Amino acid sequence: MSGNPNEIKLVNNAMSNVTRRKIMNFLENGERSTEEIGGEIGKVMLDFHLKVLQQASLIDLGEGTAKLSEYGRNFLKGKENKGEEKNTDISKAKPVEIAEVRQLLPCIADSSKFRVIANMAPPLGGTLKVLEPLFPRGRYSDRINALIMQKGEIITTIYGTGKVTMTMIKNEGEAGEALENLRNTINEAIAKGVAPAPREKVRVEPMEIYKYLPQTNCGKCSEQSCYTFAIKLMSGEVALEKCTPLKEPGYSTNQEHLQVLSAYI
Image (cartoon, rainbow, N blue to C red; front, side):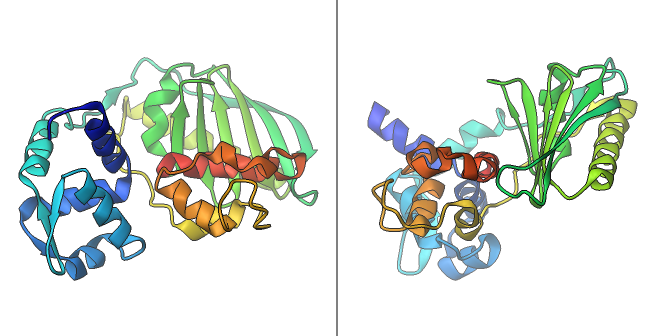
């Protein structure tokens, strides 16, 4: 590739997806059949992912086979040294306590569930960023200085200031148990003095995204259906903001879930 902006954009888009990165790593040992790739990576949208990699000149496709292109092999070699993962020292962080549960409010999207606001002390500040790998479905947001995690329907957000919010909680007992588990997980890492190395995040399927969309097929996003929107969201062809109904109060929790899920695409 010549390295012009359009080609660089194709490569960046191709490698921004977890599934496509896994395909590249799987092909590092030589040519594979698409059946083998599907067995290792998963068959959902496999053809689409292979075409994206081919368009970026990272792989060559044959009749039912795929292999790294010369450019793709050189690309991976260039990433080897940069991709080394090291544990992060957090030995100076202090153990935390959940100081109080300040509010238990009804969720907007489901009045039978609650939204919890609590306080964690001392505030973890920037340490939150290196704690992200502790949680399989966790991501750190620089913009709001917060660690956002998902477990089932529950979304938990820890802010650098010490504020903790949780959505879709059944009752105060469940809130207390979840906050206690959160405290223990963080304090165990602090006691060891290191956070685990970053790892690939959980794979998200189109149906999981579709589940939290309005499912009205209203067409306001210019797509034929909400499921089509989910597929294009996964491929990076549309942004979550294009689904304008999510901005309505009744979908606020759905939007929170989708913002978390979109981090794993």
